[in-house]
Each structure stands twice: as structure tokens, then as C-alpha cells.
Length: 250
Image 1 (cartoon, one colour):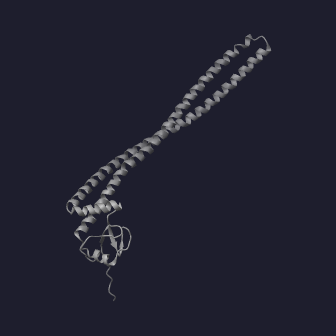
Image 2: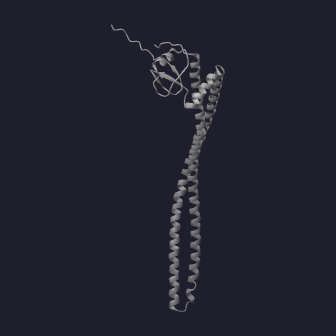
């Protein structure tokens, strides 16, 4: 059960206007958030794309280096063959020993190059096995992003319609009342930044949480006129607290 107290029509208007302004602020906030959310998801996807591209680039780098090593091995094998061809024509043991030493050096170099080439081939094989899975993961993430973007764009469309409806509602409210009252409301709203109308609970303004003088409280509760808080200038209204009926003792 709740006591019924008539409320001044101007107060009813102010409360309705503030509720509408709150709706408008919520829709505007939601609309501003949508492109930020899409851009954030897009950045995450771009980071995944870069990671995939980097992996692909590393594979190409290994392939290029492997081909270079293969060419270097070929050059060294040719070098060794030409060096060995000199052996039949040597005239001294010193020259013979020097050529054998050179051949041994070339062989060690070839072995090193082939070992490095083998390592690269193993690395390449491992990375090439991982790449298809990484590409599949990216494609799945790209699909999710496109679905998310579509949902957000649909949400944006709904928010735009809600915002347009709230603005029309506000225009209708403003046209239906005294322009001077609207100006007072706008002035307080600009001054306080959050809201221009506050509820009175007990003797406390719920806008600034300062105590209101008892006589003013009585007048506010009467609902006959529009009063402002002496501390924060917000318009004050009072709504009776629900009264709970207690059962009579048996």
C-alpha cells in the first residue's frame, strides 16, 4: 500500500524530461561504443593476421636460406673437384700435402654447410606442418569477427532507432510545457552535469546528499509547487515510501 499524493504537473514534466534525457544519454553512449568495439576486434584480428604472415615469411626465409646453402655446397664441391685435379700434376711432397690439406678444409666446409642445410630442412618441415593449422585458426577467427561485426552493426541500427525515438519524445515534451521551465532545467543540468532533478528521501536531497530545512520538506511533500535544493539547485520531488500493512494480532 502507498499513500497517494498529487504531484505538480511541472514536476511530472521535469521527471519525464530527465528520464528521457537519461535514455538519450544511454543510446548515445551505446552508439559511441559500437565502433570502438568493432575496431578493437578488428585490431585483434589484424594481430593474428600479422602473426600468420610473419610465420609465412619465416618459412620463405628458411626456404631461401636453404637454397643459398645448396648453392654454396655445389660451389664447394666444384672447388674440391678442381683442387683434386691438381694432384696428378704436383711435383713435390710439399705441394701434394698442401693440396690434400686444402681438400680436407673444403670437405669440412661442405660438411658444415650440409649440416646447416639439414637443420634448416627440419625447421622448415616443422613450420610447414604448423602453418595449415594456423591458417585454419585464422580463418575461423575471421569468420567470428565478421559475425561479431554484423551483430554490432545491427545493434547500431537498433540504437539509432531508439535514439531517434527518444529525441522525438523529448521534443514533444519540451513543446508541451513552459519554455522558461525548460531553460531552468537546462541551466541546472549544465551546472551539475549529471542530472537536474533529484528525489527527496527523508530530509536529504539525493542529488547532493545535503539536509533540507524541515519547512521546505513539508512544502516539497505537498507536491503543490516546484522547489529547488538550496545547496545544489536541483529540482526536488518526493515520492511516499510504500506502507506495509501488518496483520492484526489474534
